[in-house]
Image (tube, rainbow, N blue to C red; front, side, top):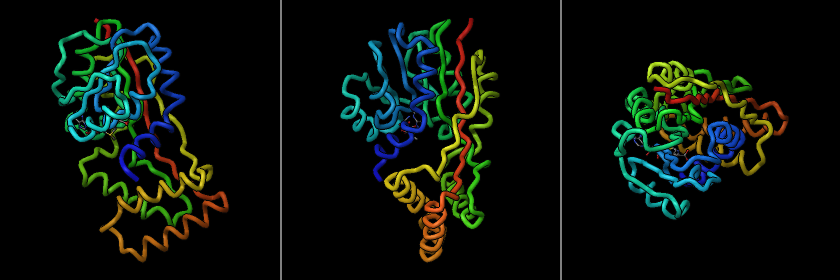
Amino acid sequence: MNRHSRYLQQAGWTRDLRHYVFTKAGLAEAKHVLEVGCGTGAILADVKSDAALHGLDIDGDALREARIHAPRICITWGDALRLPYPACCFDIVYCHFLLLWVIDPLIALIEMKRVTRAGGYVLALAEPDYTCRVDEPKELAAIGQMQTESLRRRGADVGLGRRLADLFDRAGIHIVETGVIQDRDAASLTPDEHEKEWAVLENDVAGLMPDNDIRHVKMLDAQAWLRGERVLNIPTYFAWGRHLR
Ligand SMILES: C[S@@+](CC[C@H](N)C(=O)[O-])C[C@H]1O[C@@H](n2cnc3c(N)ncnc32)[C@H](O)[C@@H]1O
């Protein structure tokens, strides 16, 4: 699966929460909105607003794709740790599966707050905690741990989600609401989504687990899934709050 397809899949998991939070944060009245770490534009393309939409990312290739998927967006190359915008220029600044990837998520949140106008909102819409991942049946736990290890080796802070509220607090963002998004219920995946999950999993654990073992676990997974007994729960946190002076 290419990365835009993966980002679209992740966007699907958080769509209801995003629409709820955007509405509460006043998207209808917003004039300037920024996504930090916008990737290929999967979320920006889904933002229904008359506001000027801006997207920033450190990956130039992703931004080239974003220009295709979200053509009306103002795209900027830059680092979340040093946002190239003046203070107080956005009504809403948000991120989605970003903070686990940045070297210093506290600085990123402080920067997001800085570029948000007083009274505006900072939203972190999805940050997972892989350290509390649950896989059932038990035989599937090992491959889940491998996937977590693979993310860690690629630089992810795999336990960031659970620290999100504390980071907001330390950044001086007045929290309005925080919590865990949902249980992604593996048993309710469509066959197509199930295949996509496996494509990601196989890619992530390649080289960490012998191919034969991967094939065996894939068979156990398929059997459990058909019986409706497969559990895959990665708690994914959100937080949104206000820049109060
Ligand atoms: C998992 S992707 C999420 C993309 C998009 N937010 C979405 O949900 O579809 C994380 C994105 O964060 C970007 N990123 C990571 N570190 C960054 C940094 N320091 N500054 C800006 N973007 C960064 C990556 O290049 C990548 O595009």
